[in-house]
Length: 438
View 1 (tube, rainbow, N blue to C red):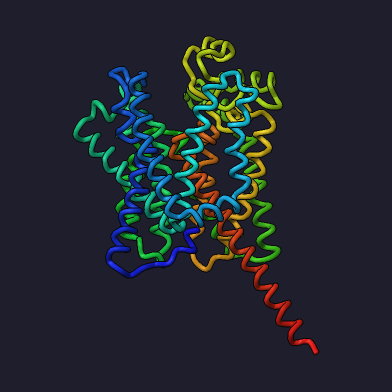
View 2: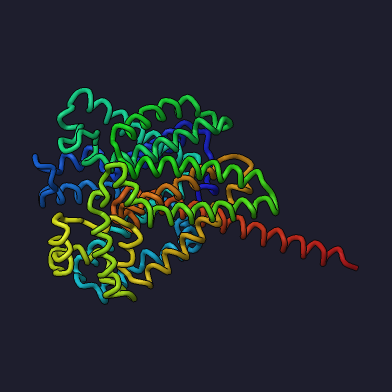
């Protein structure tokens, strides 16, 4: 993986490496939806058929880059696939769901697009370390934040939403800017915190524009993800500094606090919002979730097929749209969306993979001598929190899912590599003891 790369000191190799990292950053910029989605939308900020065609065309250079990088590193790609079978199984599930999908043609097309998105994640995970990934993501999103603030000053009519006056910048709505600003703020915060990495100045340049965009966007989900991510950072650092019984107690306390927060959100968030004069329905999400839960119960085992439920040919989707009186493109909850797509089968597979990644990621951070694994763990938590109100899990050509898959691959490859090294070391010790025996 990226840990197997041999550094070269020649100027040509250095320039090629820099070009490769710039290309990865450009691919992530395209997947973020910055600028391109705005161009694809009409005057009423609606995505037309021609706009969708433009977005598909823009995705092709990303696909070509992914294929080229993996072709040039085919040996590492094969090793990476062998060490990430659970992630491959999850991405095979959309293809299998064609068998029971209510819109098999649509499911197949989007499954292929998802596969190409996964190739980009493999390319990034193979060709970068977590520290390099932190820098690439920070600079890419930092550029988006700077452009958004510049657009607010130069073209406020385009940068600011007419409906609520919130900043959307170079994205199509305020929530997308809020998510990106949330990720960018904490990524820059980690750069500032990790003095050993020597990136504090760059982190400061990125942090303040990101924080400004987060606040100007008015995205509650983005702000909650940022605050929760900061809390996760504190937890992971405390986890690294404690040992034995203290570490076990810390984990138990963290799990209890997490459970209490989830219970509070489930039972008391709506009354609290009402008391504060806010929208009790979370901008229409609460009634949407109630209707989605009914559809999940209608097909509990296998669901409706990958991204088939919200197709125009599905009468159940039209029933929901008619009751909520707006065209929800998805369930606005990543976990419900997985159950809609794949039922309990997909839910169990996702749960197994997530528990595995969270456990191994925490172990990698605790065993590391530096803070290289702090940001991947924080990012994973942020993305999972964002999916409480949005649907980005297992979505093709989506910046957040590509990043989540990269984190999963980093964790799987590093933990598998460490396990193989431990096994090899024990085998060497056994051979040495046998040879030393009389």
